[in-house]
Length: 285
Image 1 (tube, rainbow, N blue to C red):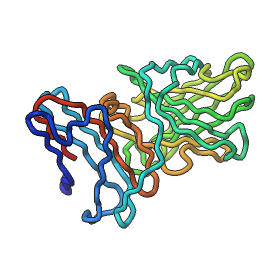
Image 2: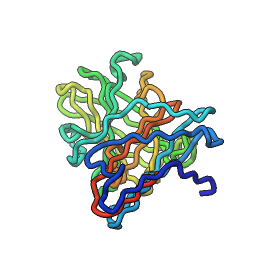
Image 3: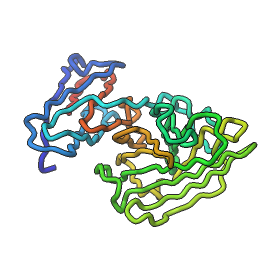
């Protein structure tokens, strides 16, 4: 609040003409940060003021910049295109079209820990957050994953409010056994545990995919906030390979079209979507 810098503003005329007339299109916002005397974390707020209060929305994003305040385009995640509800039932069709990131095959010490895809999602009016991890198919042995969550979104995954979700996935002949444990990141104190769940593929199904969910209360999550995350296996594989994924489960972010940003060492590029409105619209960044 003490260092707010308005970098640009778009104004539409009374007929709705102008740069805000961007029905169904995505427009990149290029921000020159050279004049901002800072480095590290910068919070940028996208704000749109419209005649209809129901159309007012905000999006807060945190980006990482280097010492020269340069911004580079990050590796992109695949945004969600599905409205299907995620159900923990060891059936994975509901994950089709959900936000995800892929990972290279063959970059782990062992195939049993070689992550090839990482998915995340939430459901309306649901107090849980959901994830799915996929490894190379044809596995019959135990997999262990650690999901690291930076809940205060400050780039440090070791704070007392941060979380580690440990997942132990053992495929069986006709079902699976999945144990999930939530810990504090700073001292590894156990917060919650969910054992003996059938949330993964069986050996007969390939032993590749496992899904799990954690109540938001276990994570200390509050609506309207964002957090960062990455997942790793016990066999030296990580998704993403570097950096982390920033995400907010808030449903309002769906209208932006890209609710997750992969943050690397250099920074980020934002995309926003504006519908065509009647009357005067005054979006500003």
